[in-house]
Amino acid sequence: MKRVFGDIGRRVVIAAPMAGYTDRVFRRFARKFGADLTFTEMVSAEGLVHSTKMTLKYIEYSPDEAPIGIQFFSASPEYMRQAASMVKNMGFSVIDINMGCPVRKVMKKGAGAALLANPAVALKVVEAAKSAGLPVSVKIRCGVKSCAEWKSIKRFVAELEKIGIEFLTIHPRSAAQMYSGESDWRIIRDAVQSFSLPIIGSGDLLDIDAVRERVEFAAPAGVMIARGAIANFEIFTQVRAWFEGKPTPRFSLADRARTLLEFIRQEVEFRGETQAVKWSRKFLSKLFRGFPGASNFRAQLDRLETLAQVEGLLRPLMESKFSDF
Ligand SMILES: Cc1cc2nc3c(=O)[nH]c(=O)nc-3n(C[C@H](O)[C@H](O)[C@H](O)COP(=O)(O)O)c2cc1C
Image (cartoon, rainbow, N blue to C red; front, top):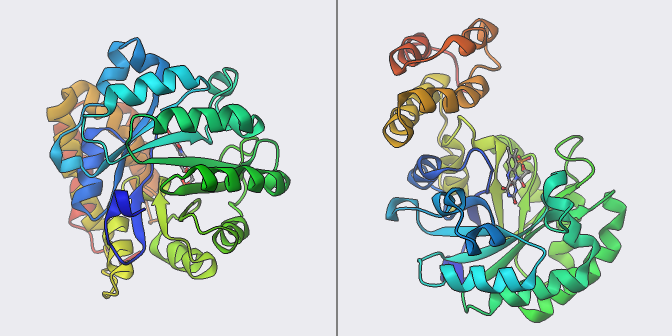
């Protein structure tokens, strides 16, 4: 923990890795709004070793996204060793190893959550990542088929603690659950009480009230925010303020709409207008929820093609007086 965050003396709030979301612009905003650390999307260690164009794009970043961690997935200690050594001098604060991805394409190769069923290989992958000398963290689920596996997963966590990693992030859903059902924060509480290894909690931290409730219950060393930050970078400001013992700021829908428009403008600079507007639809779709008439806004998403149209759609929301959420 210390090697990544220094003597921070409080809980940390981390922007979770999210494939298809946490690009450079997302990370810049996460940092600007208060995240202590950001992450790349998950990157294939094998892809990096073969320097595929896509993979190299995933690992580019600029100083306003840092401190930043790189997340690898791999079932091969050898690829992991090489990939870790390739990024050693790129300025990443930590290498995270993905042991939670439930996607079939990844698990079929023995990577992601499949590593939980193969602790011997998983430990070798961690050792290989550590060989480059950068801090290493691991992100797991509570099990492959069900959280009932937690008992045996704990034996694996004890091994991780023994070989030494900086922190362990737990998303307490099984891989089979994907993102359905509720994450079981009793598992995070049990991990916090059972290990001295710093535990980061992930799962269903969708707004500041959900964060408060779960952090008070489980007392983790920090949290990782994923879906709760989509079209809501303000959540980082709120959680950070709470962790710093300051009053929690409140944000209106108009505030979030203004932030999202600025985000989309920067996406336009980053990927060009056509691609950026397409990319932004999923963020807008998230913004257009939970207020009267939201479905009318959502209905217009498919037709969006230009930044001017996005501005036109967001204008009434930016001028709205919808109450705080
Ligand atoms: C669209 C999407 C992409 C994700 N991509 C990754 C990823 O690349 N690596 C990873 O470790 N977790 C990934 N996750 C899992 C999240 O980091 C997080 O652990 C999970 O969503 C639970 O948090 P939440 O309920 O706050 O969303 C992803 C989640 C979503 C929704």
